[in-house]
Length: 333
Ligand code: M7G
Image (tube, rainbow, N blue to C red; front, side, top):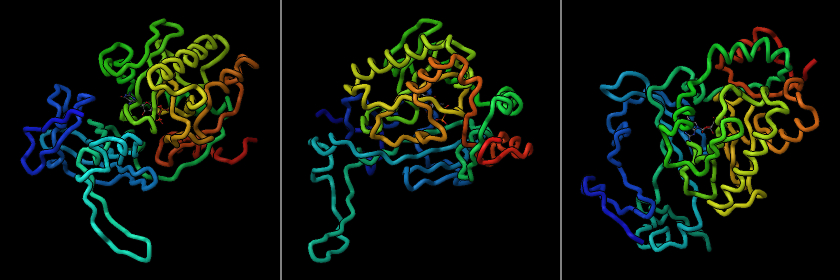
């Protein structure tokens, strides 16, 4: 397998890189925000999740106004990394002996640098809402009746929500166009399927794609009715086919679902590998697309009538509004 040096890196940091996927460290790209983190000024650790091996820190870059959030994630192993000439099983994996007891030997392993890359997301400039989303905090379960949706949730969404610019950039092919896995450009039932921000786009064991609908104005599950069945069926059928063709994974190994509440109120569907415990797959947040289709087939206005549970973060203004109304009870009515 071809490798290349990063020639502009300091000698002590020169490493071999796999260029099969065109990967380069410090890629000279117009959109690149920073090359190293040496100047990052740490203000606060917002969350540190030992299960997911992720950490989110808040800080700033000198000379750049505003707050930046850095999210690091240690990557999962892939089977290929153990079958490759430049994987873990080489002389580059240095073992440091720790202790021995009977037949048990303990080591710390320092593999080749290319294997120890951290998936890194920078949000800049970050808003107060981003800080809230990524801060460790208590969460609460709300049972949202339709009345509560109309009285509390809907006005809240209309007043404050994350910008959807990144969504429109994708739909308009202004960003991430080279990452699109499949597109149906029909304005009513079409959508774009592409790797989720949370996925490195390579590790099948953590496969995560998102299907974003072309039509505007559909905020969430709550807006869906029988007029959207062609859209939902289209996303299912073509999304599954595109993933099978591209990644060789059958529909039976995919978890295809919507979040309620989502973070971003432009309708989208999550596609993840069934064996991967992706963030947000639990019952209080995810609704399988096949279930959604079936519910609407039975009752056309199901999602305009049903009580929907959802989790809300304690620092979220939405929580404060529900709390003020004293309606945070485990069972509706
Ligand atoms: P959600 O259910 O609205 O939010 O899903 P949540 O899962 O964060 O609660 C939105 C999905 O879009 C998430 O899985 C995000 O990781 C993903 N996403 C967010 N942004 C800002 C981007 C982006 O810029 N590009 C891509 N490809 N995915 C994104």
